[in-house]
Image (cartoon, rainbow, N blue to C red):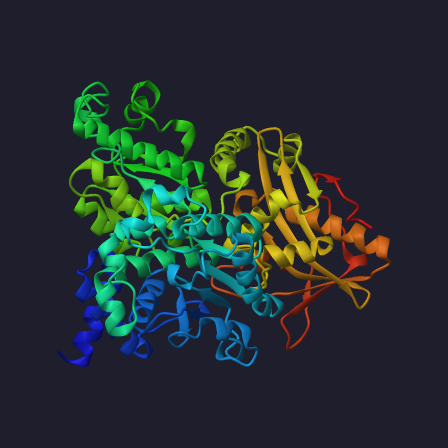
Length: 592
């Protein structure tokens, strides 16, 4: 096959196939090909440097990880340690790990790396804590797998309750690591992956004897996909929106022909129970903060009756952030949903049972992930879940409230149509911006907002949870509330006070509160802080990206002026004259 044909085939698989859907040998072949031709494919993906450390041989999985990251929209520069050098790499400040200055250190121990398991769990945890110290001092993000379970029956079952067994030691160590250090290290639990891959594939003793790789080649695709999804979630790359077909997706049959009493839904039949279980899975995604949208070729009133009247319907209309049912093509309707929810196409997943509809959306909206649900409805949850698209590094209170904020948006849009004075209308909603200290319960949300926000974000500077805690006096978290909804924490400001001015290190704002004048209220707050400190200027650094056009527009509207030949913008305090009509409430004395 010619070079051109190899690249064409590779690009086809990247665009049209999930890595997991390929036969293992074909998946590994495509992964090697991408590595070979990566410089021949046009790429403007964000880059992340990852250093992988393990005491087993990582060489055979690296290409697959690169492929999976590439499909997720990340160009991963992955380097890895030699066999058996994990501990020395972490402890030696002159090791390649620190010379390369990675963005993320990914530590992958196995049960073989447990210290003598007759030592106390506290000593085990202390040993690992010492390994992280140098990385944390250098402010490198650490992601670590928890210990997997050994493959031997004799070491499991009843021994999990024995204080002197290896399995008990592993269980307790994993629990203690997560309990004590989850704010400093991001842990990945491998238990579900180990079950899905199967014990014989996860623990391949022949492969370990041959090349010191503990798992079979057949385990590489699923392992790569899972680990990529976990790390991608730390980089803010989890999918945000699930767009759903209705007929033969949430229930069996066509509602327009059969009516709500004729569709297949309920535990009376195996297919009906399959649809109920699939809805239960989707409901759990919604509880994690995934936005649900409907995109169906149906009469809207008829389709909504199922949600209202059918006793076995688990998903309610209140769970749906955007409901579109008409006879337009689905790509156009997804474009409408994207605009209403104010998200990017690459944060959306579309599911449908029709191959024709799926191919149309794929070709029209290539950034939308499309999953063609096929076969028995009892397998639908697995078909959607196995790609790891919705894995979350944490679930916050704001995630759980997200759908309600879009219900409030619908109500606001209805009310808007009855007024000619937009500012007076926004004021009538009694908006309040609450500035609060970043308490432990809010750390996950602050980190999440810094990582996931794209449209209103000045630059790529982010803090992890430990950095947020260390800089808590310079991190402003702002909660927005009006008479219709509590939107949770929607604004984060990272500040620094030096050179007699306020330096905005970064400023992020949730797209759910665009067009509510919150940026004006933020400026009022900064002006108040500056006056109390006798400062005369506010400064920020803006780095333009493909997605932060909204931020660029706002800083220009607020009067910031760019300093020639730099990415720095300044604003004189005396030039600020804004009125947001938003009540500002300080829970802490940040204005000092």
